[in-house]
Length: 396
Image (cartoon, rainbow, N blue to C red; front, side, top):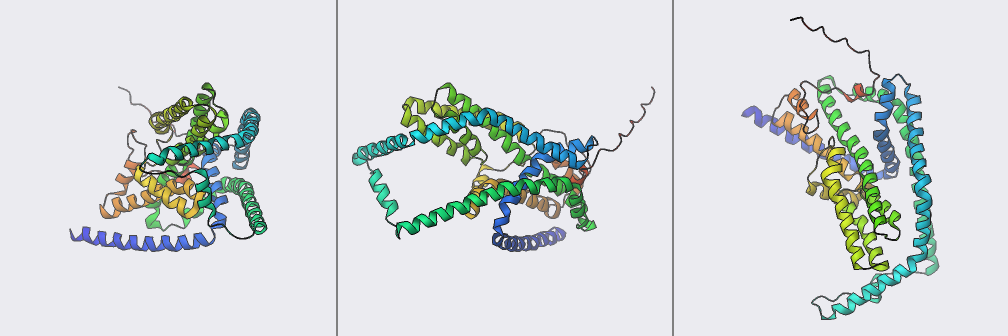
């Protein structure tokens, strides 16, 4: 019992030190936050393409050539999809821009009608004029100065986005080429007594973060296609744009799918009727049910599962502190934190053998657990060695 108490005290102080270290890292990271978006994009590309590059390397394709081939295949696939989707999306976007004033007028009339009907309700809804006056009450300053500031802000954001789009793939390309050497260098920094722990943690983190990025992109693509097809069947205007927005929003768990459906409902209410809006809601809900019960369990089975409450809390913290990029990285960051704390708890507080922890976490849910330590992540990126000859079968 005294040994258990001593270990619990060590873990408590370790958690205090970890919290202080995370706070320091957070302060430093916030001061250089401009570099994180391209690095995050590069990391997502690395996790997405590294399995293909590693598979080519195991077939004795040099890693530089494998990385180049993976890039070519990826962008060729994107280009082929673009040849089919972009012309139709461009036509719908042009039509949407032409119809936008009409849609806005329909929405404003709908809001005014609801405000007029709410005069006999317990809660009175504001009209469009009241909403505009409330939003504009705090505005001030000269119109020219506001316009200049707006143009400068938009230009800065556009430049930042272009910088991210250009730097992210370039950084990812060089990281993919040197990834085995980078992993070996990182392993050399780990003390000998902690190498086994680091191997288990590295494998779990690689599975969780890599599985999340690859899985979310694939799920977003499938959900976007399903919703687009469903909306096209009911002849909803701008069905492709709505499906693309819904698929992109699906990258953000829990919140994104419902946010993506708002646009479709608004278009249905303003261009069709209430029945069409109900069909849109049914299609969105059906796609999400298929995603939640069929697609995501199959695609994301190797990723770390988080409680919905933990996901919502992570999204709240990420969105508040870092905006859109915070929403995108909130869930994998929470998964990383869960893995670290879980490993610390099982190995130091519960005093479980490392082999037992590794065997329990080495395989996805539903698969038989293996014994012994899981292999290091760096071993996954090495070329396959010659196959070991099978042991001879004893004669009866």
